[in-house]
Length: 357
Image (cartoon, rainbow, N blue to C red; front, side, top):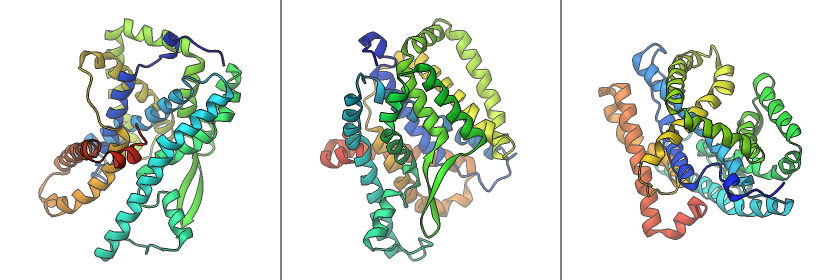
């Protein structure tokens, strides 16, 4: 891969990526705050929560994967650079993944001994079972993203070879996307007690590969970005119209009428729109002092579990939509606060759980 100038290599500056990663982590908190599942799909609370949780917020993960692929290949010139990056990802991805999965395992191990009936299946404490619990994130499903990212990073030497021929790389991306739409979502594996996990997800690999290809097509992508910024008003109008259309599609997808189109085609479009909106407005705000996105992403499920014990007595007396807003807001704030406290007072723990980021 030819060495590129710093100007061309910098498709997204560090400030933009810091902002977009943080926004996406908060969107993930919003997805997991959804509580309208028991309501009819035409209920106002179900519609509003569905628009955000099954609509706009689901763009977070495609953005995560896209930027992860872009960041991996941003400064890659030779195959040795790939293996060096894999080594750094051992610290920044594998280490926090194992740390968070272990933390959730210990949490449920202690909690299940204190609260009877907390878990449907007893926790097995033989070494092999413990290893499986941790590697396949048995007690924190939100870690599936990091598990997939590890799988994709392991494939980067092959991706590097594929990207030497641009037409071959684009063909692979198209084939991967078509395969995920019409053939198979993922390769699954049964771990314990019949519980399955996705070993490899084709559609999310497509997002990751698209991020990798952005480096190869840096000139073309920059031209598109410049065109968008030259036509800000038109871009915002188109974005607003598509988001309105997307809100209606989200209600249809909730009823499983158009799930394939919704999940595989329209979600990436919304992810691009979110990119555009953030890109148009983020320069107008001062640089935010943020905590690790990895900490917020990792801790929010644990915060939500603990808060659920507080919400349960009052939830029958509040509307579903109000509970969604309260849960979303408090979980977001507490997750950021915990990340800040760890960063300020427990730096070794912060380093491990954030991957040194």
